[in-house]
Amino acid sequence: MRLPASLVLGFCALSLVAQAPAPGKKPEKPRFEFGIPDAPFTSDVARLMREIGEHPQVVTNVEALSDDIGARLTGSEHLREAERWAMDRFKAYGAVNVHEEAYDFGPSWTRGHDWGRLLNLNGQNLHLAAMAWSPTTKGPVKGEVAVLQGKTLEDLKALVPTLDGKIVLIGALPKPDPKADRRAYYRQIMGVMKDLKAAVILRSSGRPDDLLNMTGSPVARWGKATVPTAFLSGEQADLLERLVARGEHPQVEIQIEGKTSAKPVQAHNVVAEIKGSEWPDQVVIVGGHLDSWDLGTGATDNGTGAMASMEVLRAIQALGLKPKRTLRVILFSGEEQGLLGSTAYAKAHKAEAANWQAVLVDDMGTGAIQGWPDMGQEAWRAPLAVAMAPANNLGCREIGAFKQPGDTDHWPFFQLGVPAFAAIQDPVDYMKITHHSQADTFTHVIPADLIEGAQALAATAWGFLNMPERVPHIAPATR
Image (tube, rainbow, N blue to C red; front, side, top):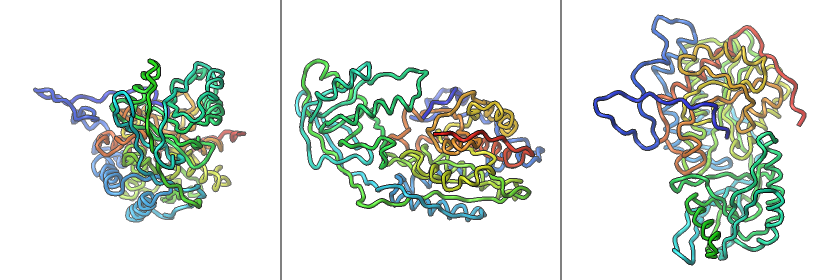
């Protein structure tokens, strides 16, 4: 996912003796309630922000989702449990039209026992995890490590035929032209990789401190593995690459397990609403993805965004507010496998797209929301500014002059021409530590920032729900 456009530093708590924050935590903010409007403010949006600031349930909901239910890989029973739990929560909060919508997902996948070791030199065990939906090795595989790297695509094409049957570590790949189509570049890389007939492929996690990474999908268009593939800790990937560069011929033994279902399964999106009082056919969609990877417990990717979306509905209902347009909260699944749930929803409801006022997606971790990108549409800047204005004192004031790429669930809606936005958030430790790693746990949730993010999300949604104007749509994408 894209890094946000700016980084907001947390205020340090003032004390006579400085104390180091807990690992993974930002220093505490001073007790100035910047995000809670003064008591005399009686506008609906001020009351909404105050309700979330004074009586939040978003933090306890994220804790229950991550600690009690845990990892929520699409196609797993854990995600089904989370979906049932979410529907019960929505009903308890007074939502209407609470339901789930199924779509064809592909085969489910369950992680097995993955392990590896260096057979010569220092003989250490390797810290690795199978890429999701990877083929298995059908038992231990031994071999010499070779590195696939090059400065150009032609370098890679020349090297690939020499690596048949080897255990291949993916090294430095050609860098794309900053002005080029990033997706087209990755399609070119994947086109070269499909000819790689390795025994096993190892990919560096690209993370420090022995953290792993994860990706994978049951559908080929999102990089389905055709060779047994695993992520290796960054430090150990560096070790193997150094050994190869020195001519040491590292020998390894690796086993990659996992179970893919024999038949395809269905996945589900969870939907809940508050009906509009004046224009019920016009809809503002607020959402995040409920699915997660299985190395951690999915607290920041995307328990925080999913539960912040739920908090918007909860707070509106708790106050008995009546939005003019319909609020529709959608908790998507299959996001991690290629926006499968949001794509399925947008396709199934394409005929309704003209009535969608705006789509707001929260999917960048625990950090407070700093604003929204204009998606390259000048006509969307003014409505964004109006909608988010009540949250400006939270630091939610940035309107990014860029098109947020298709890395999260706003994208299928944007492709239909709908004003669709993914929040710009304080990155905190999201991309460096928690994103797709085993460290994605509730320990890294920052309650104050999560609450402020929910306030900003609610304020922006309330603006779109009640502004008299329709936000203009654009022509749908042609591809």
